[in-house]
Each structure stands twice: as C-alpha cells, then as structure tokens.
Image 1 (cartoon, rainbow, N blue to C red):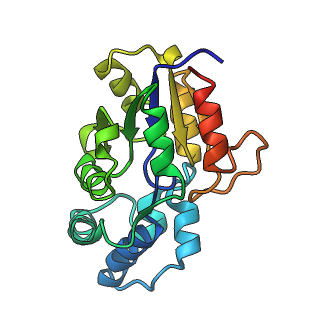
Image 2 (image 1 turned 90 degrees about the horizontal axis):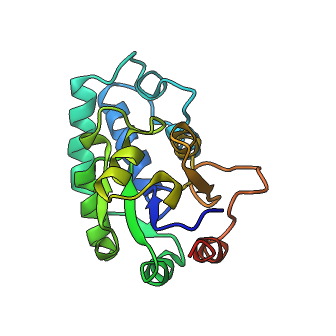
Amino acid sequence: MQKKQLIIFDMDGTLIDSGDVISNTINFVRKNLGLLPMPKVELLTNINNPDINSAEFFYGTKKFTEEQTKLFGDYYHNNCISDISLYKGIKELLDEINKHFTLSIATNASAQFANKMIKHLEIKHHFDYVIGSDTVSNPKPHPEMLLNTTKTLNTEIKNTILIGDSDKDRNAALACNMDYLLVNWGFTQHTNQNVIANVEDLKKNILSFR
C-alpha cells in the first residue's frame, strides 16, 4: 500500500466508545415523541447502516423534523461528555502515530460536539482538523468530508487513509478512491478477515505506512 501522510479517523465507535450517550439521546427523543425505547444493541447496530432511512427507522418520519433535531441537540449538548471513554489503547496509539503522521477526524456527529468530546478526553491536541456533519452538505457515506479534509490539509488522496468502524466509512472512502481500514470493536461487527481486531494490530498497520 502507498505510504501515507494523513490519517483520517472516524470518531464514534472507532476512537470513542459513545454507545451509551448515543442510545440515551435517541431514546430521549423517542420518549418525547411518544415512542417506546429501542434496545441499545438494535439502535447501535443500525446507527451507521447506510441501507436504512435513519429518520424513519428511529422516529417514524420520512425526514428529521425540527423538533427531533432540537430534542437531539439539546440532550446531546448536555450529556455528550458523560458516559464516554476512549477505547483501550487509543490514547497510546495516538501518542505514537502522531509522531509520524498528520491526524484528523471526520465524524457524522457535529464538529461542535466532536471538539467538546475530544477535548474532554484529552486527545484534541493530536488532530489538525475536525470535520463534522454540521460543516458539510452530505455526511458519510458521501465522500464530501474526506475530500474537504484532504483539500484543507493539502494532502493527496493517495497519501491518505481512513480508519473507521462502519460501512458508511468504507463507502465514503470507496467513493473517492481512498484507502481505508475497518476496526471491529465499534458499533458494526464485521466478518471480513481484513478487519482490524484490536488496537495493537491497528498500530502495526498504521506504522507500516511510514
């Protein structure tokens, strides 16, 4: 594989275990809409499913409404740094690879929330750029975030790799011919043998791109 200069990370399910706050937020919205809570496993399994209409699946509407967006945003703003943690080994991984690569984040969460979360977890200093769904017209699996990042950081796609946990990450990378790696400790469980099983293996893979 081509040597890399830039590593773009997905955030939720890749760097940060935010399953509790995501499921709690969606179920808060559902409760306010008069809907029953959804089991956490079912919710997280589908949060990054590119084959469903998320608004319809979680809230029963064709599109996200202003009420849903406000309820979600208010609850998440107040709770996004509670019940989150870095996956084991991620801090050490970032400490090591940041010596050799430029690092950035491309997340379907808002950049505002993402910056708040990575600051709370004391990893913000590792990232030269954070892009979220509030700063693009098309979130992942559209490649807009990845193309925006490479342009902003003046790096060619061939010298960039995306690290994520979901099919949305994979499809975004494929859409702009970017290399990618999928990890298997996030919200999506993969059976492909090429998926990275643990953080130590991820570190070995990334350092091989020097």
